Amino acid sequence: MGQESKSSKEILREQWQERLNTLIDNGLISEKAQSISLEDLEHLLDNPIDINKANAQDLRQIPFLTDFQIHQLIHHRTNRAGERLKLEDLKTIKSWDRATLLAVLPLLKSSENDSLAEKLNSPKEGKTKFNLLYSKEKRAEKEQYIGSPSALAVRFQYKKGNKINLFLGAEKNAYEPWRYQSHRGFDSYAYSLSLQNFLTMKKFVVGDFRISWAEGLCLNQGFRLMNYNTGGYMNRLSGISGLSEGRKFRGLAGQWRSGKLSLMAFASQRKLDGRIDNDGRIYNLSEMGLHRTAKDFERRKQVPLRTAGIQLSLELGKLNLSLHHLYYDFSKKYTLAKGTGASKIPELRDINNHYNSAISYSWYSRQGYVKLSGELARNKLGGIAYVQNSSMHFTNIGDVNLGFRYISPKYWAYHAQTKTHALRPNNEQGVRLAFTSRELLRNTELRTYLDLYKELKNFNNKTLQGGQTFGFTLNHKFSQRLNLEARLSIKKNTDELSRLRLGLRTKYQPNKSILFDTGISSSRANEQWGYLLYNKMYYQISNSIKLKTSVLYHDVANWSGRIYYYEPQLNYQYQPLFLYRKGYRLAMTLQGQISKHLYLSSKVSYHHFNHLSQNRTSFSLLLSIK
Image 1 (cartoon, rainbow, N blue to C red):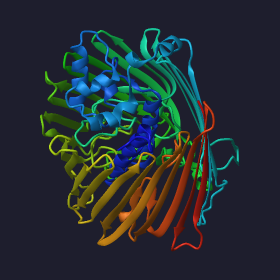
Image 2 (cartoon, rainbow, N blue to C red):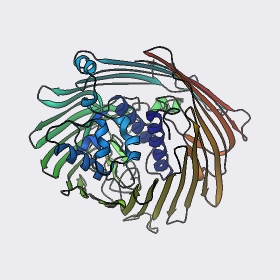
Image 3 (cartoon, rainbow, N blue to C red):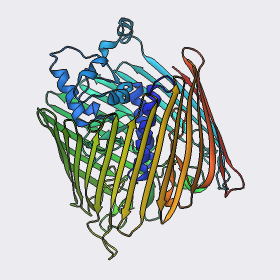
């Protein structure tokens, strides 16, 4: 497709969102994880990865790169004997095809491409960005909300090269109050200061941050949007640059490196939502962060959570070994009544202090055609968890990934997330096979996977639960103007509840200024069908003004068959649409550049539901100063 009607960043945001929607459809991620992933994308767009300095862990943040492509880039760079790469050199690297380059270029940079003026100014001058997002909506539902329907989010970011990154933010969601009882002001605040090469540390972060270790059996906060064929191995510390309230730490963190050894350590203390009874037992522990009713405010920031962790890693050529240990408690005053995500396990009740320890590894073959990674973890109760992934690249065919997991009933970790059927790994064994190819068929990308899982033990004297998930996506480019995509996903459980989703989508660009995105999605759940018809248009009115529109009609009778939809939104608006029952929706977004440093965007939407006497309307305005 041409790039005039939609910028490369807009295309990337859409691709990222579409893959997230697929994961949400299959119940593999939550809405909070989706928001975190989109915040990661915005951070990468603002802080592209330098191809001359990045290691495998840095490049693994980009979900459109396979393990083989990552290895080939590093191998190609090493063989140049110190000669720096330019962005245009990427097309000479094995397996870096045109589709890959179009998808990832907005997230990459090369200091070799910088102009002389940029190189001279970079060390002296920092970059500042300020965003103010205001929105207001009107709902037909008569909820007992205590706040106004307006929402306000403020973001400030200062960056000086790769040395300093400061983020400050505050947010009030729709129907959250400005004043209620002793509360005043925004509902949530976020702050982070990240310093690179500070004193003896490679990285130092104070404030809010996220950490991911290995395969995620102990700790995974920064959600990793993975390709169908890519493993999840990643060791990463990053300061936050968004306003998502969930899955983050607040405190101090540091990373040290000396030769082949690296050390990461942190300490955190923050308060989560929850209800504490008279006996000090915690119920309904949550990090969602929505406080719109009196009941929500009774649970707001009631539960103290203290966490500390340490990781030691050793690099031995193609082999990376890591040891992890994570400790957390609820201020030693309270106990968690039931382990979140493992409420049926008797041993995982009345949890006070808890810890998880693990050993992990990753290994590449000499040419990068094979990658193995895995993690073995144990918790305080003696529960064991193991994840093993293998990735293989076949020339002129594609990439194959095979993964195995075993999570014992006693194993539980509050901060964990890995490739399991449940959002938190517990009481499950499974296997996953995936295949991705841009080489097998000309101008065609093929992605498919099959996941089989089963409970290890059932505590209700019932049949062990399990199921299968299958997904298939075919994307064919007929010409520079026309693109077709077909999708199929099937999810079936032991109890015979099943869900089928189908999708067909075309992108057509008649000229350089306009693009049409038209499709149909259907779902079947509990023997009932639902469907969605939509059309999106992107129109470049002038060099500084863009218009985006969305029109859809939906008819979904069953909540289990709800359809997720991504419509053109303003930056920093991450909420997907959950389409249920019958209705139609109209939306329009207008983006404009007022001056060299000032940008203004607005969005209006109207959503009609046949079963409601009123409709939903919303208005959003985004002011950006760069």
